[in-house]
Amino acid sequence: MNTTKTDRIDVLRIRDDFPILKREIAPGIPLVYLDSTATSQKPLAVIRAMNEYYERNNANIHRGVHTLAEEATAQYEAAREKIARFIGARKSREVIFVRNTTEAINLVAFSWGRKFLQRGDRILLTEMEHHSNLVPWQMLAQEKELFLDFIPVTNEGLLDLSEIEQFLEQKPKIVAITHMSNVLGTINPIRQITRLAHAAGALVLVDGAQSVPHLPVNVQDLDVDFLAFSAHKMLGPTGIGALYGKEELLEAMPPFLGGGDMIKKVYLRSFSPNDLPHKFEAGTPAIAEAIGFGAAVDYLSRVGMERVAAHEYELIGYALEALSEIEGVKVYGPSAEQKGGVASFTMRGVHPHDVSQILDSEGIAVRAGHHCAMPLHEKFGLPATTRASFYLYNTREEVDQLVRGLAKVKKIFG
Ligand code: 7TS
Image 1 (cartoon, rainbow, N blue to C red):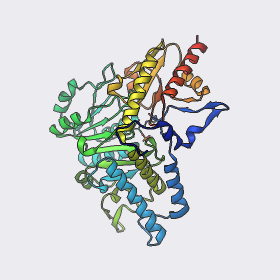
Image 2 (image 1 turned 60 degrees about the horizontal axis):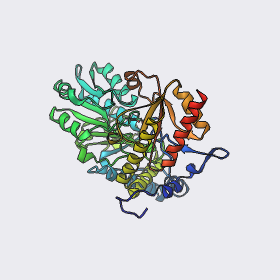
Image 3 (image 1 turned 45 degrees about the vertical axis):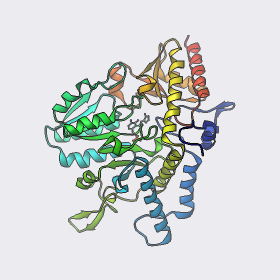
Image 4 (image 1 turned 90 degrees about the horizontal axis):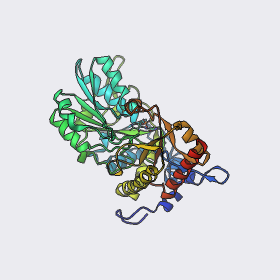
């Protein structure tokens, strides 16, 4: 991968870095992995970084003065710095390690929300949110008697921004919004939304679970206040994610979880919190996973996020065209210009679970269900969809295999 960032990516070479992509699901049936929206596969560089940590450096961090503890701490903090650079944060102390996107959003809801929101305050969300950007706000709203408003989704699967100024006139305290829908693939105009929200005095939390892995994302360009994302969707391990927050906001927020590491001093009846970012990292963190997360970010940076996005843009365009030619298949969401590499669809007369089961017999891994976005499915009058999603290691041939698999589904169901 020494080519310049404007070149196309060398998919075959990239695939070589992912051992699992050589797997057969049954003898002679190779894996076609089209479920990266749920979780991505991991390159050898990530697996090796984690193994090496366990083989050479394993120790608890921020505690011991012995060599291993110092090495482990340095590697953990180096990973934080890589992630801060990757998203354009001003300082690494603005990056908090959490378990995943879900925990990052819960941290903001319950640390910031409990301190700064009062009865009758409003929170502005959208109809296309993943449950992890709905339920924490619902829980907070119940606790504090807040109002939730929702920017509607159009039939094309875009946010209907014609009403946003009216919503903002109601003076919400925070706008919490996904950057890219995990069902429709819609990429939302975050820069425009932060500008309007800030002018109205609202903070903006962006759910970057699908955007940070697939698009160049810069928190300063977008001017977001909080950004939540998960390592496992961007070539890294499960069990770790990040919350970015502007320093002055994180400074003003109380700790979320209490325990070791997050304190400066502890007395029998009180404590003083540690400095950022440790204030929000109670207990022994996922150390090997943080190091794996750093290796994942290194890998993506070497490829170049512009090239990752361009590759997926090409694949989704090709897939949308191929799927539109299959009679009875309907894909939801906007055209390739306005979305990432996600195609959620229905096939007339066949349940999405049956579609994915038959595809699985052909080695093709897709997801069926509501994809943790039940209100969005309800809006479209659907109990479930089948979803194929793409990443930097997918090929046009795999799209062709999906299309052949769907032909088989049609044949079986007449
Ligand atoms: N937000 C979005 C937009 C997501 O797609 C997901 C996971 C999350 C938040 C939660 O991420 P987590 O790492 O905390 O679980 N989305 C999916 C999916 O579409 N299929 O499986 C997980």
